[in-house]
Length: 588
Image (cartoon, rainbow, N blue to C red; front, side, top):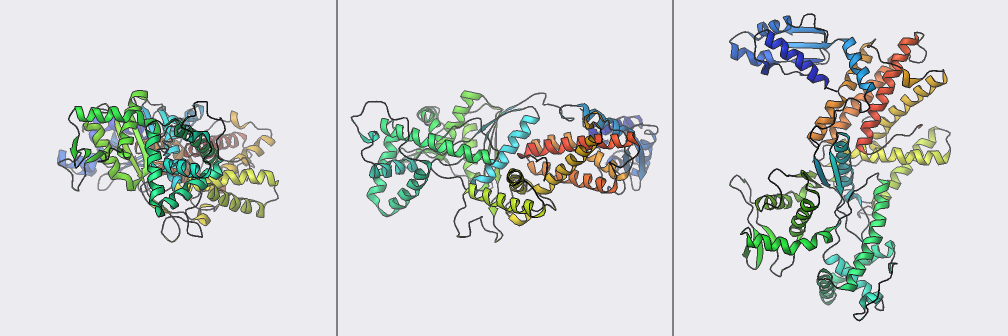
């Protein structure tokens, strides 16, 4: 379906043209004074200079050409030259009727779908997920869902941290504890066991123990570095241990991400990019992109327009070791070979911006990507506690993600059960859904690039701009529809007619903007715009609900129209929260 703003603009273009003015002045926007009008056109103000004519005269000329136009119930020229517009209620009702019949709720799928890889995980294996992983997962999942809804091919990659010294430390500590494992027998040639020699609990304890010990014992650290070197150069036993680490870690990571309603299409890691590094380094050298600087291999990426220093992109350290830049460039090479994406989008902490400036410039300069391949960095801010510092446990440590989820579920369970007599099992399931809405909406309602305060009390409130408030609104609609069915009605067969009150028209106007909001939010990579829209829509519904006696209405045609409006409101709200990555229960 065409966006309602485009339909209005089309009519204004015709009016400007008919009045003898350039159509470039016919731009229409939502009114910034909704008390005066619904839409506005300020083109006459800009046209005044070009035509050496008073803007109010131009506005009146244009408005004159809108007389009898069925789109508008009001088109006024207002001093000093604004054009104020209100939509015809009948036109608005017809637009929503068409929207109601559309399986995609008015969304036009992309005419030229893009293939976009989103890198939005980044957890390290052998470590539990903590709150620092929350924003990347929540924001990335939402963008992936937005893109898919609009018809693009979105490929989510977790991009595991599974390479480097941490692997060597785990191997060294495991060898110290269990020296008789076959992985450490240089003469062993048989198949390695299917079962890992550790559980996820043991693995999560091994790494921090080894890391702490290595800081106090240089010989232990040297041994770990040697183990890392051997692993990266194909040591068979160590490769076998790495396989176990990945299997055990990924199984646990999938469980934790599932609790967040986050999924990935690819479970690739830094280790998958390693085979591409030798070829990458050789290519950069042979084609003159890189040079040696104090033994290291680097690529200059500074540009004349830079206002601050952009250091060279280091490819190899002086000892020949690779870095994150090397791995990220090799991953780009791998992604281009395997998927040929139109865009690669990284949802990463904004403090890594310089790293990605270097990587992107190097990739473009060295032609590792096509000329029109887009490389995008979406840097997100920090999730802080009420003290304004990064969110911590009461003891001052980094909170595990599963503990945070559990705490919020418990809080929601308490709130749900203290006011209602409800089956405990149903209350638990509901608390999980509502708790997830609190976390995700609390995060996504903030602009991604900004820091925000994670306030459990506010996020779990059923009032204000929160996830639970949105879910409560949806459940309220479901309850009304259920009662209508009990009266013998069929909500799905009801048809929307024109609005009968100001509050109903306000709700209908909000619904009519759904397709424009979704397109704009995806174009600007801005899930918070979906949240703003959802909150506005929920508020408009609740205003309409409080002013309208829906189920006791005696005029069956009017009641059916209102019910149809509720069905559409429910569907749009549920699609929005699905895009944001959570869902609503049937009851609360």
